Image (cartoon, rainbow, N blue to C red; front, side, top):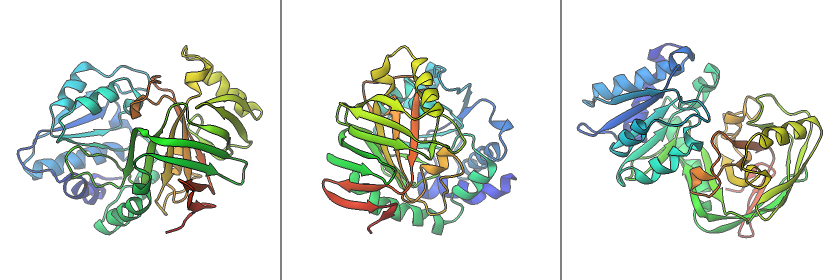
Length: 335
């Protein structure tokens, strides 16, 4: 993929997503090794070129952004002094111990954009917006549905696979990522079209069944994994070899079974072009797909902070009730 393919996306990022203006302090934080990822380095270069054309000379920082690695103090300091922060290929930053400090320590007026990690070039080409029509189509759907969940609410998530999970949201941070982050203090993701909410600690109760995708492995699941949830934590995992692998991965962390199996996040997807069967990252964006994040909730301001341990689990065909009102039935929003 050539750099020219990203001119439309770069212009949308600078103008429609962030409204960057001449004279603003802009920092580009880039993961080391980005040049080896097809398409991703070209996106970074296109964004940088677009900023220069707008009279903005960004500060560019590169660091080894591997999951579980500490974020350098210099990266935190520069981000907290910037008017606009754009990160790309910073694997693990969102679930690192530095993230809450950056989120809370940055200027109240600053805008923050996380661009994608290393997925396939095909994923980037399909999911990143290149036209205003596509950009605002996703923004409209996300705002109409996702904004209803912001604030204090009780959510019930069910699915025909046996999932029946109830929890509360609103005590921790949450975002409806429409892609529009022009307001002071904004935090957005691109590709857009997701809702991401921290689940109130201790509130989740019921059964969570995963039979599609988890971020633990990239391939589609061939068997169900059943989590029994009490007081905000999964207290049992059943379902054969995949369940055993999940439990073994969680046991590698010293935090203990309660924290590693914390029901940390609830999310929904709003992009009709996204395909849950490609990979978990794209699955989170798919129209009607729900996801539950298990593990660290520190990125939402919670008390469970485990570097590199936050496993998103995707559900197809979900039904969602918000304070008793049916918002989604069998993967279709009741717009």
